[in-house]
Length: 364
Ligand code: KG4
Ligand code: ZN
Image (spheres, rainbow, N blue to C red):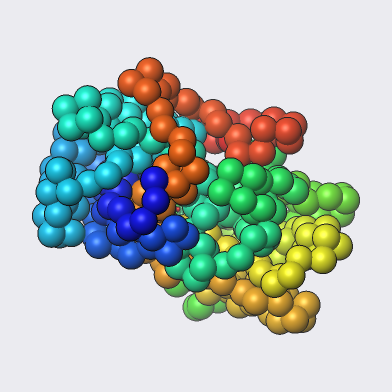
């Protein structure tokens, strides 16, 4: 594909049904529409994403979401030049809903079909928003993912580390649940932390004493549980002030772990002497003010650029899928109607598989 073209993106790998239309000219892209139908209220009372409910909701809404995205872009299906769809990794029922819909559209219109790795969508977002040059270091932290990657090209990634159990977003969500707070937990914990003393309660920093860039968050959540139970036994209930202290202590521990592991990854990245050294962050947890500030400071200390895309492009969306699909289309790649939905699809095929599978699906 050469010259200016238009591409539809479809995303349904977790709990957001999303569609977007982009006008693309090589690595430059303009977002014409970016529609997200969230499912939080469907899952709220279960305290986490229920895969079967998510899959059904995607199947029910995906065509409406695409219609919305097309109408907001001012384009019709026949004005498009390609259809990009998340083909994994993620909750398989949801991924299937998107892939089947995209196949139907491709078969009916004859438009090229492009299967996209959801993680590549996140990883390439700093190029969509800020035209960052390769290679850059990316911390990808969301409800489903946690990886530190050197992004070398559209399909060339080196994973330097990742979580061996929960993702940071999952840890925020579980912590909020333990403390009787609303979901999603990240924003709730961040807001409550402002009312407390983050140094009042000491929480561990799992794996920080070990070399390397791998992380662990599940022990941290267990430590919150123990502190909560001790406080309840001592005070006869969970005092609001203790809850705020615990939120602050938890957020501080997550910040410390992520910033320190990113610092180590930066050493490896900078040793390669990149021409325009850049640290980028993506994923829903990138919304966290304390984390952003910690990463920004780290980048400043190293004299390098820091890029944090706007929140709507950090959390799950289809603009990033359309963008990643456009790069494959430019490279001459295209998939057939035999495109498979993949629950697991690591970006760095050479890196050893991570342990564990979170409640939002297998870790990639
Ligand atoms: O990227 P995202 O929208 O979806 C997934 O791919 O999972 O990320 C959602 C996650 C949730 O776990 C949510 O609690 C977390 O991002 N999150 C935050 C904040 N805002 C959202 N975590 C910490 N601080 C925040 N302000
Ligand atoms: Zn995601």
